[in-house]
Length: 249
Image (cartoon, helix red, strand yellow):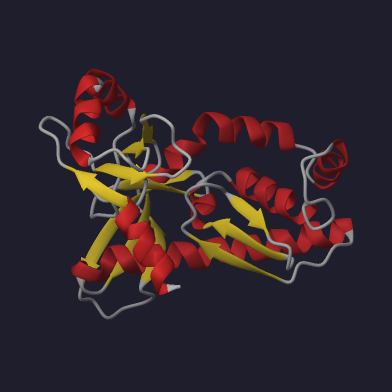
């Protein structure tokens, strides 16, 4: 395992280019026949993939030739919203203002409150240095509670039995189902409207019966989630926007 990890580290390096504030990752791949360039919307990172024989200088020249395209793509990305005092983030689709209280010994570490003018707040107590992590831990716990409930409901509705669920900071997918019947989900589903979390839960539960995207699979999803088309459209339009919340400034 250590050797594989070291190999991956050697295969990926970083470039620092004038005029590009984002991280530029250089990856070598044995199957690559030419240099390719893309911008990750979820990580706000520029990724250059090279054939094994190319060097960093060639990678830098390649990015420089396409610098206008890179800047345009980065400029089109929505601004990140870190977990900081005063930031507005959604919870179950509704906007909440983050409020760091500092070292106050009262109530829960994280609480949902409403002000007199009906502003919703996520109130985080304790050392401000650790407040973003406390808020993330709380959101992950909220996501797990919501997903536990909806997975149980859909599993019972379809007469299926998952082995368990896990909640992580997944980037490439909203959910997954393993061959061991373990379901994994992104915690970011809890900041989307409840319909979206419900759909992803139904989607992964259906994979317990059909590990594919056949018409039979979609029939199972629709049976337990009649509004699946509405949820799929929302994810296609707004899904990537969820990744900007909680990211670093």
